[in-house]
Length: 149
Image (cartoon, rainbow, N blue to C red):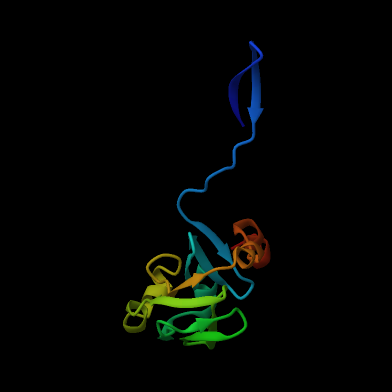
């Protein structure tokens, strides 16, 4: 809280007014299906978690969504295929795909080496803060995957 010095009827009063915290930079959220989303205003950058890429093994094929595609959390928007399995990729948020990372299509190993940075898959423009609030924070995601990860 920030203290505010005020004058009232010639008296000095020290009052404390709660100030709303301003989040600077990115906020990262997670899904139970092992996607991460970095929130910056109304754009979410989405990828698979480091935990997920380790479970999948060597990534051999990636399909990212088309720019302009409308998304919702229940519909697959892409595919990640590894030597072990194929997994659908979901957008954690309802919105419109505004950018797709073509680098991961041609360099699939980016997901194995930089899953939560350069290995991002797509960016989605969203409008519902409620959907963001329902996603897991880092502590909740760690509890989901277990403390040894």
